[in-house]
Image (tube, rainbow, N blue to C red):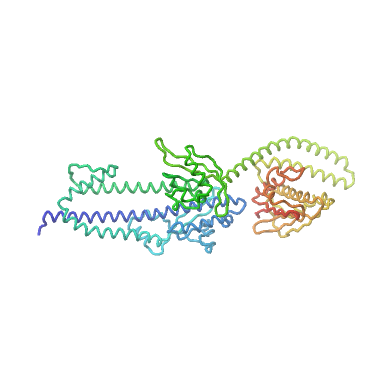
Length: 599
């Protein structure tokens, strides 16, 4: 039985509807799975970069510690790892592994030390076709990873690995798939009903729809009547494809730009708040969130007057700045948050284009960071002054030293037949002249790059030698020396001259701190992978407020001191990747520990 024209139109419209629904469903499925994977990949990449940034800060804060130990002991880094698991609903684990695959830090501390086998890369799912990608996402128990390599001094150091379980992605997919299936199920029977009444006008409507979609794609939203054209189904499919591509490109571009802006702003140490109309918060970075006590999601679109208490010091400055045409610059404000007080420099100014004001911006600078920078500049200036000083010392002191050494040699020849005690005294004088010459050289080395002359050195012999040199001078002043040396101490590869001078400076300080006599106790001991030389005296001690100043160049409490000795000690230990630790109690004495790595 042949079909009539109306039945053919109904059938054609129905088949076309089926084709459109199937094609749209396939495109929807492809884009849904791809966007789901890309969003998970983007969130994981953002978390990895946050962990990487915190790792760099941990390494910068602990320059003298072993890198892995510095990371393992950093509380902020552990906090980032633990918080990252709650940041993204897709993350199964976050960890940092060394080059052997052993987990050094893990979001679950109980799993640290285990070797974690590598998983397939999450980005590999993007290369699959939509069906295989969907099957991969619904395969039970699969785990994919996002990795971010780490480097230290230009060499591979470890890897940040984030595990993403497909079971955690399925929940997000399931809701969208159910919605899509429901829409498709409704669209199919509805198409049959609509086709019965609209078969006589279908082609005309399709032509109009194609023209409207084209104008919508170009941003023209006013309907314009045009003469009908042929090949309407092909035109509709082409326009739908172009529209879908344009919308997808715009959406991805917008998401990428937003994520890049967020990451850039979050890296700033200064707080940044953007205000729109009626002083409502449009954006703030993490530094500003820490000051306000709210996340961006909680305060976006809210006026600052609603978020902060009326007595909050930041509120008065910002409101005043927003009301002033020229704004305010670097207004000092002290803010207390979670029991901690911070001094901020607040600047508020308007943001406008050529025609009108778009909004306002508040910049919150950490005054403590600026003070630290100023301190570094001051320290650099002192180093420059030291450079000029050492040049003068080298010129004014080395020539007399050379003359003394020459005349000492002549004196030794003339007193060759003198008693043994005289010869010993001449040897001591010669040794001290050489030591003074090394001190002059040490001044020069303090402000210039220095290459260590590492040789295997017995620290116990070095301690005995330095103590023996000081014993002759200070026992008459009532200073007694006590040695407790660890005989099992290994030989260390150090610059013997620099360590001898550092030890001599510390022991001299200990002796000078006991003008009425007392005990100077020197001990050597091993602390894990480090060796410690501990010098304790019974002097007056150091007040707590001065402990952070004693290593500053030129700082001294002695009337005849230069303020250079402990600075040289600190620099010497830094050159050896070691550390200087000081504990002191006023009236009871001071203990200085020179810590050196075993190598």
